[in-house]
Image (cartoon, rainbow, N blue to C red; front, side, top):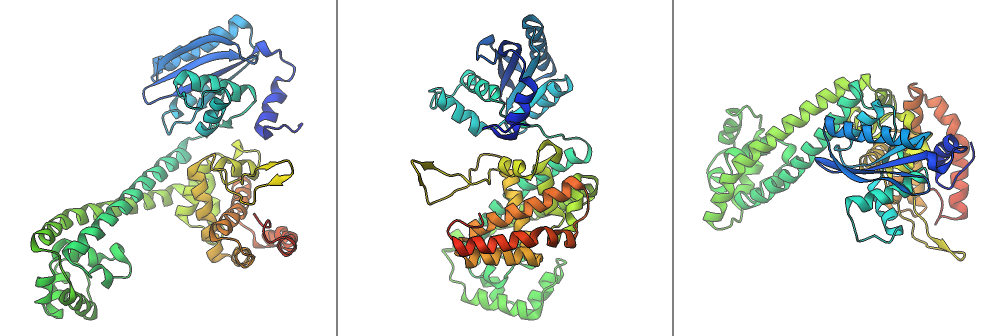
Length: 445
């Protein structure tokens, strides 16, 4: 297959339509909203064959789109039809699935690329559904777009549970900050007695039932231990003595403010406990699903547990939709950007961030976990840091390497083999060291 400026995606599309007349190749951009969508039909000359029209995101609305495409295809004798849908959270997924089931070639368009295409048409600050559709025509004609996720069975359920866990975790983190703020008002110094913070069940129990330094100061260590035991929480006497000492040193705000914070704490801690139970349920279900998904084999890699594998697998989707690991890496938005003109190049290199946020975060978590348990990855990260790389640059480089390993394992569905990995990296390690010795500023990115 010939190489193209637009990469593998463009090469594959052009290879399919190479001998077709432009007026026989139709593109259908679809801008999806929450309840409705807008679409139009154009040919490869950019001529609009069917003017923009709106339809509901329902079965009958999707039927209207399918009927319009089929009628237009027959009317102009089109031999190729490609539908491009701008990614819009989960709102575009049902429509994309419906169109795929009707035999259409459907691709997903990144919202950032649509924005850039709109800017090229002179409408960077004029965002409407119709403008987005015309911008998408330019992308589709050039063969841009990513294959859609294949989500069915355990893979589909894994995606839902990972998204659910991500939302619950964000809520728990936000609520945790609120609980800490209230705790500092109600019982200053108490949270400092527990190094694990709100993960400590004893701390949560005290915040909910005894957020009053004056009452705690009047108690003995034995009484505080008994208080915890009566609420099914184990508390040691040294810890009780530490809490009582903190209560004696607590410099409190005025009583009315402290009492209000104490009243609010009980309810907030109860909600926080419920979120922790939800997260535990998510973890349990993801552990059950993982062996039935392509990502199950990833746990054979040192440092990759259930959550890391589940997050990576859910974000990657069907690995077959990517030509290789490099294509998936570009899809994540971790690929570096560069700017060069008239022989001059910017010294600062940034990641593109044009792609899947979920896959980007999953790759970094993957690299972090493997580097903690795999000697080769740990040594690679040390070399980068010793060469003067910033911690985040080193983390991204490790994520790149971890992704290539994980992608190879998930595509082959063969467990990780340390001997194969050692053989494949022996030459690369020598090249890494040589490159960093020659030019530490540009090596190993």
